[in-house]
Structures are given as C-alpha cells and as structure tokens.
Length: 144
Image (cartoon, rainbow, N blue to C red):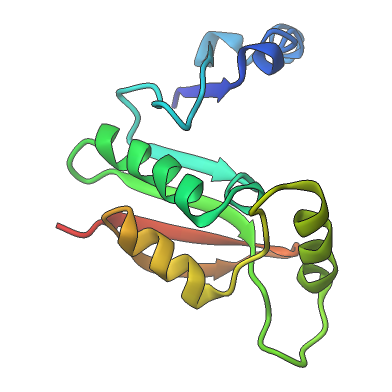
C-alpha cells in the first residue's frame, strides 16, 4: 500500500517526521492546492476535516477535483463531523460555532447537506460510517 500526503507546500515542507517514522518509502509528500487540483493515480482520495472549513462552493470544488482524478472503481472518503438532528446534543454543535467564527463559509453540515455536496460534485454518497470519535466516514463513488 502506498499513499500521498498532499497539503499546502508550507505544511508538507515540515513533514520530516515521515522520515523518522519509516513510512517515507511508502508515502510521497506533495505540495499543492486542492482547490486547484489533486495528485493523479490514487484509488482513494481521503479528505479529513477539510470540507468543514469551506463554503459549499469550495467544498464541491475539492470533491470535483478528486472525482476528476479517480480511476474506474475509485472512491472518495471524507472524514468529517456531521451535525445531529435539531435538539440532539453533541460535539458537532459546538464545533459548528467555531467553524462559523474561524472560516468564512465554513460549518458543520448535516448528512443531507453532505449528500447534496457529493451530488453536486458528481458523486453518490454510498455510506455514512460512524466511528468511535465525533467524526464519521462519508464514502462516495462517481455517480455515472
């Protein structure tokens, strides 16, 4: 198994820990801007707690960039908090306020809002998988 760590050049420039952890031989470190493009040749594109910082327009653009590079049978996996139904407490509710304050357009979305983002990007939201953390896994495949 191989991976690509893709982030802003200023972030991946500090990825020296990969050398120490001995995963560098299985992980390429690439700098760039996922709002513009993502690296090619990945079977799975995973974005973790990234969509929450952007507006719908920007979040869809990131997902579309992933879809554009997916090979047949590829998937997109988003690791995000999901806003619970109204009246149900949870960490996502508090975190939503932080996103609103810190990021223009950023917010914690409901499952229905994620489904709409995936659809707008040309993806089908196939599964929403709970984890032992406040995050869920949102698994999508191309809608075509």
